[in-house]
Length: 264
Image (cartoon, rainbow, N blue to C red; front, side, top):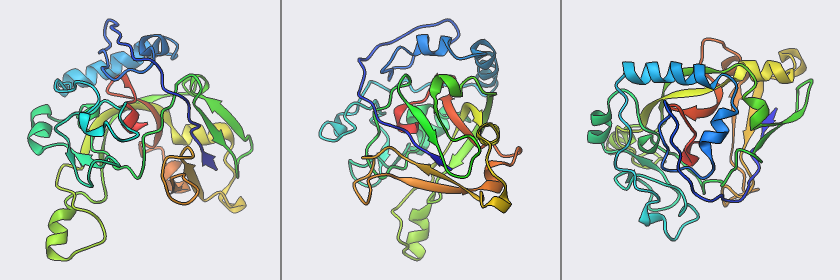
């Protein structure tokens, strides 16, 4: 089973304001119009707003647009907080927020303060042309668009993600490993909205373990990384992806907004 995200060209910038929906300063398409087409959006926003109120969500007030440090990189179009600590130079973008900013924001992390682990450039994707190509050990191979994906059952839940290298700087002081020096801020919490991976895999008819469907393979768009075939991939065990108690999902929103390009 493979998931693939085809590339598309950049769109003109625009801003929007919808009652109950925070305007995103990094919009590259008409997010308001897109969100109106998502089934059950009123219920999704009610659930998200309740969680944001409960956890006293505070947006990133320092975001001004693209960071001038990216002006000579393929990511020059991506809006980023200029205070993010870049750990491997300018590009690719591997960063964590200053601990003081995370503490100031509280339990929920604004998208532009969420840590980022990149191996290459940020793909320029469009909601209207982006699709997921599913093949391999499934009964119903398909290419599913975003408009089709959001018609499946969705969940909205706070999830904390942590990079495997979090606090590696301290570890490297004791015994040097192969990874670079992450501080203690490579952990972030957002309210993610998406289709549970278990639901999606059942939708495409994943085959049984006896038939060999033990791993789920994910592949990026071509051109995302400079090495090899220029795609970046990862595999996850079937048991993890199919476990209903684990919040694995194909996410399309974070904190009530469509995904920031650094996160999908």
